[in-house]
Amino acid sequence: MVKSPSFTCNACGAVHSKWSGRCDACGAWNSIVEEAPLSAGPARKSLGGKRGTRIALSSLSAEEMPPPRTRSGLAELDRVLGGGLVPASAILVGGDPGIGKSTLLLQAAASFARAGLKAIYVSGEEASAQVRMRARRLGLADAPVQLAAETNLRDILTTLENERPDIAIIDSIQTMWADHVESAPGSVAQVRAAAHELTTFAKRRGLSVVLVGHVTKEGQIAGPRVIEHMVDTVLYFEGERGHQFRILRAVKNRFGPADEIGVFEMTGEGLREVTNPSALFLSERDNPAPGAVVFAGIEGTRPVLCEFQALVAPSPHAQARRTVVGWDGGRLAMILAVLEARCGIPFAGLDVYLNVAGGMKIQEPAADLAVACALLSAREDVALPSDTVVFGEISLSGALRPVSQTENRLKEAQKLGFTKAIAPSGSKAGTQTGLEMQKIPDLVTVVGDIFGAG
Image 1 (cartoon, helix red, strand yellow):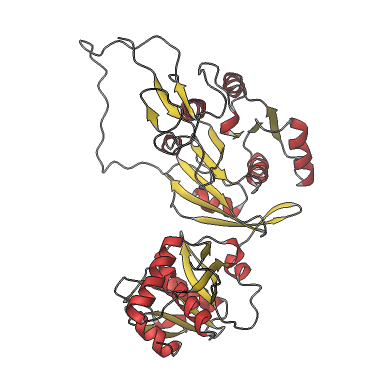
Image 2 (spheres, rainbow, N blue to C red):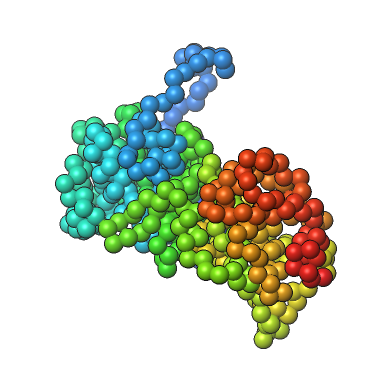
């Protein structure tokens, strides 16, 4: 029985039974292509009548040694990987164009090579001379890294099989071309086939492979989401081009904690590690100003302090603007609704701008109270004391809910010279932190007692 062909959208990965000019899922035009199978081999026969080999089973109580790890020498990269590079692992690194992915991985390749691993860097986007120029600028020209500029997947796999490296970096997966797949490089079928072949090869041969992936305008890695399921670790390299800070965030890690971050600073000589990101994000704070609030957050396993900045101004338009950078716009709308419905603080006719200083992106709900305080501070033109940190989650009823790892947040704040903290009344904090805790039960108390509004 011949399997009917399937058609896949290059923009969103949706599968269609027939070709059409417009994708019903995402609305993109001329993005649907016929998808070829991963392998051009003979069709598999039915399993009927054939018995397979019995699989060896083990109990959950069986003890196994943790996987060996090799440290790169870049402490922030090792932290995100969970303690170092694991053999036979597949890592996917995504990020905006020009954010510094190639610079980071070239520095990582040099560090692993100097640590004793055999490293190969395969570039599908740049010529070898361009990569060498970057290496000289970064001071890595003497690193024992082997370099190649190639996009043919079959030739790359043959080279890796002959050279037997410990780590191979493929920059990028969207430029790889598999000759058994009849579609253009960068298509869904090509990206999926290349990722499957490279990941399978890494598991079979025992080498670690790092795949670089471009991202879409929504911030997701381009191509089918199944690529993220194939690999062991998915890292996103984040940051704003106008800022020198770069954040490497783990969103999936089979060998370590997810949501762990590593912080780097982009300099003329490449990426420099930032061991104390809280001090870096707060380094440019001046005297206390209305709308500026310091949030004590947790990113992965490390506490990070950053500054929320809010601006509230009368709107000249019929519909007020809501602009957010570094936080969830939907959650901002929820905070504004709670302030109006539960506290009687209207924002109708007012433009609201919210920004996380330093290009940081905050996702945890513990930032709700800091955002609410920043909005109230900007609206009432009342500045919070510069030695105060804020954290807490806001419910739709206006009550404040405690958040996890209160001790770690307070210790980090005390380390940076803060003496006061505003937190939900149910927060559990010991006395060893030495900070003066102001515990607040609900948002109405914040409005009345701290800002004198309402």
